[in-house]
Amino acid sequence: MISNQNIFCNKCYNLISNEGCNVSLISDHSFMLHSSLNEPINTYNSENTRTFDRCECIVRDFLCKGCNQMLGYNVVNPCMPCYTGGNNGHFYMYLNCTRTKKITGDVSNE
Image (cartoon, rainbow, N blue to C red; front, side, top):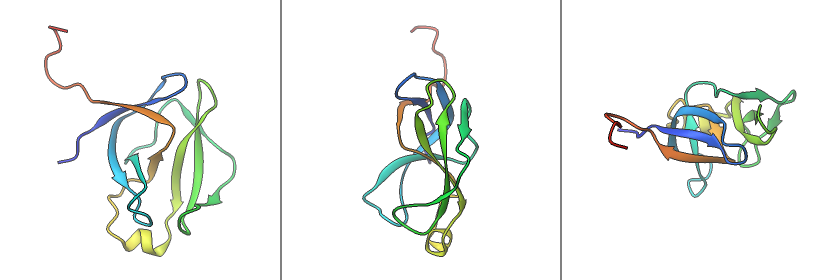
């Protein structure tokens, strides 16, 4: 079972996603980051796409609406090794973020 996490901008602490999970890149298992299935909130996309630096995936960076910091990227077109390499279907990858475990259950005693 994958533990969902809230993901925040590490500069202005805007909530970016409430469904992040810990992952490693298929192209480089030593590179750890967070990902999600759905588009992040409180962000906007850069105008241009680029080739990712660790494989041949085409990606588009997304930035925080609160402070304009680059937070991660969306895989627009995965390369064949990443597409067929057992990916989890998450195409939103988070780099410059702060994570906290998602709160579940009764929090009335906090």
